[in-house]
Image 1 (cartoon, rainbow, N blue to C red):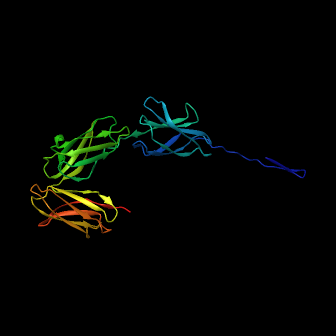
Image 2 (cartoon, one colour):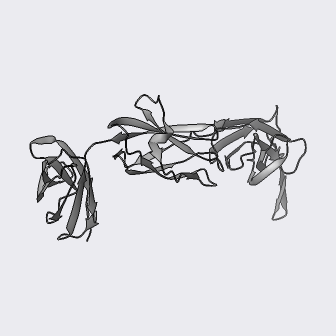
Image 3 (tube, one colour):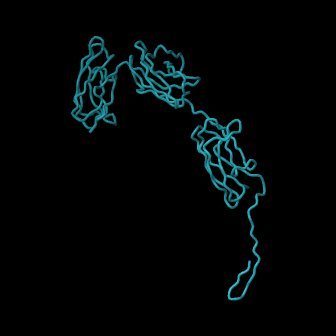
Length: 297
């Protein structure tokens, strides 16, 4: 390089060194497996410096899948990027310099299927009670069936759950209701849902005594109709509110069961800490049921 100033010149030799890859292109990435939506972090060395690069999915035939992520290598031939797995046909991720047909590396990626799930709501019900079932990761288009199994998941009986409205949406979500059979024995069970080779279970308790509130929410001062079923014949029943810690509140009422163990009564929600109503047999207080009440503004 020569510098001229005021009629004088000075020269010096400058050596410009460009990065030259010294070995094969490398790609490190993590994770190597995961469900759709997984974000994969990739890093590489020994790539051409300052080069436009692309990341894309690759299917089983080697075809390029969308989306394509663009980036640029650094002056020292390295790169760091992320790629989100979104195409179910993807078998690998391709790292390519521009549109080159030779300067690329494919790294395999295995798409895993998350296990099917199911939830019961409520998880404690009763004979002829309606139970909501929901879940995710089910095979779209498959027809789900439900059965009631013992607590160990054996002796499953589909006849114990009736009036099923279960369906699986296009995104694999499960939804619908089932009704507990009128002759199901009281106890602890597992609800088993099966569809297209997938299955999952969720706990369900079928209790003898149960109550419903109508309405089950409202402001302070709301009058609530409380209906009880399957109590002891002719039992006296004491009703009381409880707060979030399970401590008795100022809300209370009484009822008397008929010859079939059923009763109806009313109470006025006056304690702002009440979150549920408990109905217990007066002379056997451990024999009880509860239902939530939500106080609204």
